Image (cartoon, rainbow, N blue to C red):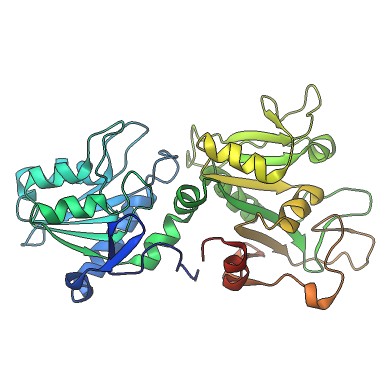
Length: 372
């Protein structure tokens, strides 16, 4: 699975001032089976909010009473209650003296809703178990400080890895100001994406294509190059069965000019240096960007070191020659010493195909100043 350590405070740590972590002594001894179990339930609740609340974090929560009664909550719709408040509403008076599990630190500021920390204090919860500290500068440990000042027992770091993995796009956005960039690629086992004549539909099977549509649904925007629009005329819509992603339509971005009448319209045409583009997208709330190609765009993002996660679908097929088109266009590593190396964090079978998830190696990220 993904190595989810990063520049956030380590498990069982909180911030007593911005940027200065201190170990919370009570947290270490409380990472027990029940805490792990209920935090896993909170993570499952957070998954329910994944596609409906960005740029807010998709948080899950569970209120658990001493007699084992549980009341779930997750961040609801844009402008809706946060996960902790939703769980408190379900628990009602039974929240007094209970423990609440929250994947992310309860907020301490007023935005579209009031501070969750104040709601927990008013409800009379006795204990709050937090997965990770919120790096948003409006929070950054202040919620935890407020709870402790009110006499609530706070443990931090339970389920740290699972929560960090789930909230990775949000954490990247809040830490860097840029979206989390997912580069989706599909190829034969010999690394080719299209025949010499340019035909490419379809290399992978329907199950892999459906899985890629779930990646689209998880993203706030999808980017392709104008060449791909001219060659393939993609619509870049989310198409999933059984209403799985009804109403979910990421913003469609074209790098360059989209031809009049192209299926991608309405779209946003973008240009300029890629790093500046990411800054602009992050500034307007794009938390996850999916780069779908083509080979020139994928190669440009790769060589600039701007990809946070590569998702590669491999079909059990071979072109069997060097004239078919490759994953990336442009110059590659000139010598073996310059070879880019990543870490495989997930491999799974999807229908007849394989999905391989790859992230930059931690040493490369550290050298670039990124989240490790």
